[in-house]
Image (tube, rainbow, N blue to C red; front, side, top):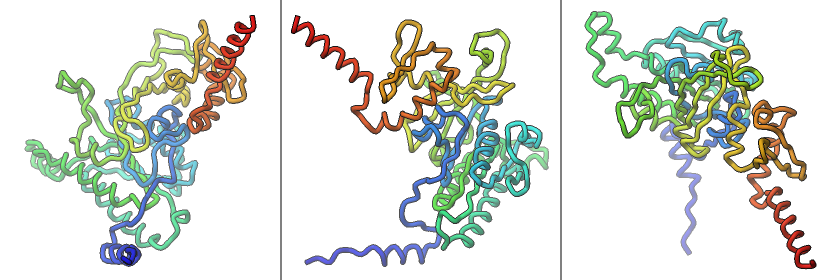
Length: 370
């Protein structure tokens, strides 16, 4: 009889010989909300979960599209609410303390560290030293007892290479001959491998530029394809005008931005799904924006005249006009989200279809009797 292979010795030998190697799985157990339920779902497949620790997430978009609002604002605020320490690596020198306070970020030294940076090498050095120190302190500590940290880089597009710095000092700007794309790929690639087994998250914003390809008109993410390949999650963003008042009425005045978000890459949900996230200037991001359209597209709502009806699991019908649904009047959208997991898990749940089928069966029985 062939003796079964015992992997314990092999596993211990590998991890001992190569300290940087992590054996086993590193499924994320800590998620931070983006501030919008629909965007959370399109990224992670869950309304409450946004981006995970242990992975690299990239928000890329044109100037003013809301990427910094989500990455350096909402994600940092929501991470702090979960006891996660945040490090802001600011290459644009745009993350003012007053703005951070306005979006709800706590800038206390025990909650947040902002570091001004300018080069790709500086980000790499900071991450290398931090992860090295973190691993030496918490290698033998249970994952639940390790501190959680979120790094946010705003932005990758503004980072320079040593070549560009030297050329600036010599007043001879010839470009870096593609070195920046290679450096950014290496940065993201190494970060993915270094943070996977630890309670460390990495979020970066990046720039986009107009596509010159007539067959692929979507904006192109700067920094080369290596950044996209190496990242775990990539969200492409586009800026549009928000011309609605607080009651959802169409107006001519611009009241904010509509951030068109397309999940280009995700390991936890279907890619290329989109949502328009409303960010009014006065009140900040609407967490429910885009949710009605998503639920309607899933056929969880049925249209009757000018109203939309949701049949709850207990048979209760929630009937409201489209505007009332979008405004979450009486918590109608909350009700659907609360039951959504049960709906997904039970393929035969569809109570509305059951009721409809029972009505048809009753009608057919009556007709036969008549």
